[in-house]
Image (cartoon, rainbow, N blue to C red):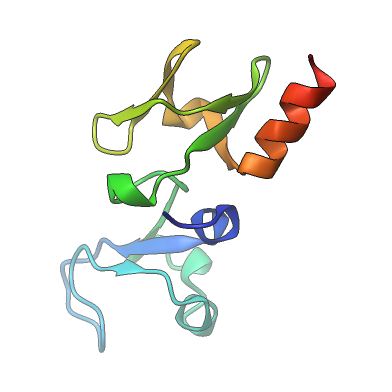
Length: 113
């Protein structure tokens, strides 16, 4: 599983079908030095910024999530690729949450006991 910081680091996907030196169509770029060197945020016709949950292996997704209005939840299942999380509170879209840590979950439980 990736850490919260790793999950939140910017990532881009090559969306141009035209080959570029070092990149192929649909490559996912996570190397922060490459992202900055290529100034990918200013090349939307070549690179698409990915949301933290997009194009992730299920094993990389967090075991805890922060959901506005619901607090920090423990994930009991992951489904739909990287599109939904399952918690005791129900099925939650990845678009509605951020990764959280076990420490944040424990602190949230303690503060809301």
